[in-house]
Image (cartoon, rainbow, N blue to C red; front, side, top):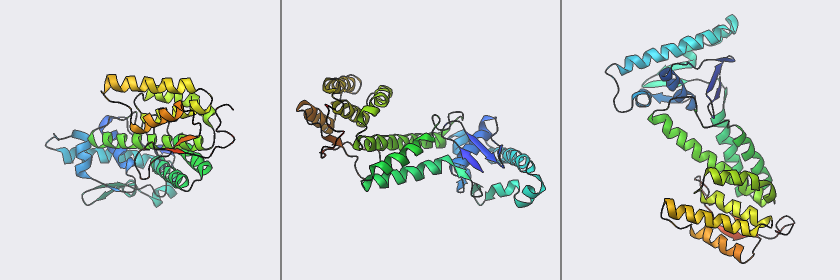
Length: 289
C-alpha cells in the first residue's frame, strides 16, 4: 500500500486508488491511513466522524463505512489477478481487531512516516554540526509536501488535531533547514524564500530573525532593521506584545554591525527557539561580500 496525505490524499493498494469520494468513508480512511499499521479505536473513529454527538447507531454506521472501504480494496486487489487475491484479501488489508481497526500497509510507503524519518535525521545532523547533511535531509522531507495535509478531506476533531501537529512539525523542519543553510553561508539564496515566508507568517519570530540575519549578511543592514520594526509594529497592533528578548538582542547586534550573528535552535523536539550566539566568520559571512 502507498499512502500520501501531505497535500491531497492518495491511498493506493496494488497501485489502484482506494479513497472513496463520500465524505465520511473518506474520513475513516484518512484517519486509518495516518495511523497506518496501528490500531485506531472505534472511539477515535466515532469522535472523528460525529464529534461529541454520535448517532444512536454510530457503531453500525461505522461498520458500513468499513465495508464500503473493503469493497474498494477488493476491487483494487482483483486488478492484480488471482495471485494477488491469494496473497491478500480486503480483510487482511483493513483488519478488524478488538476495539478498532488497523490498515495494514504490507511494508508499503507512507509520506508521513518518510517525512518524520527525514526530519529526525535532519535534527540529528544539526545536533552533530553536519549542516550539509541536515540541509539535505530536511529539504527532502519538505519536498514531500504538495499542500496542507488532508487538504481534500473534511476533518473532524481527530484529524484536525493531527493536521495542526503535522503543520507544526513542517514549520520546525523548515526552521531547521533555513538555519542549516544560513550556517552554510547561503544567506543570499534565502532572501527570496524568507521574504515570502515572513509575509505568510507575519508574527513568526524565528523566521523573522532568520530573514533579518540573511539581509544583514547580504549587506542590507537597513532592510534588516526595517523588517524588525515591521514585526514590532505588527505584534503591538495585533497582540499587544513586544518582540522577544532574543530578537531584540539580534537587532542590537545588527545595529552594532556584528555580521557573525547566528541563530541556534534550542534542543528538543519542539519548534525552533531563537538563541543568538557568535559564530566564527567564514568566507560567506561578511556582509560586504
